Length: 224
Image (tube, rainbow, N blue to C red):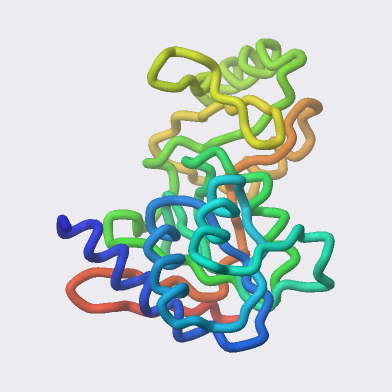
């Protein structure tokens, strides 16, 4: 296991300390969450899982975790997810795995949100990771041109074969390539008002705890 994966695993294992018997647990998407699922399964806790993607649902079921639809639970006790980038305010960018819509729905219905990341994901200012914007296919080209005119450097996400990536919800993703986000709240407001935008990857004020894996584990908590 390389150093980055080891850091991810450390953060993932630390996150299992927040999970107790009887909890409804939101299960995120991505490589760091994969380590969390393995560590959680080893604890053999009696939990109910709500997932943010089809692939997490499949993996959770394989590990013997009871998986239910989000509408079958009243509330989620705690959600553990990764992040593509986190700043000093514990705000972040998510959606590199194309699951941002479901991730945000699960997060907004959770009492507590915990992000697990390695040190490379932590930056003083957001923007080095392209900002995903999930859009409906109809008219996506017009949105792309509008974003380009606004200086947001959009690019339609495609897979390794050059085919347009389609999310679990049947949408496309426009990645905004920005070096820094000087006003993430202003950008979020702009994107929220655009017809055709389903959701964006700015997760502002969402994370309650960020666990950073490295030589030592860092636990950062939001001040409420």
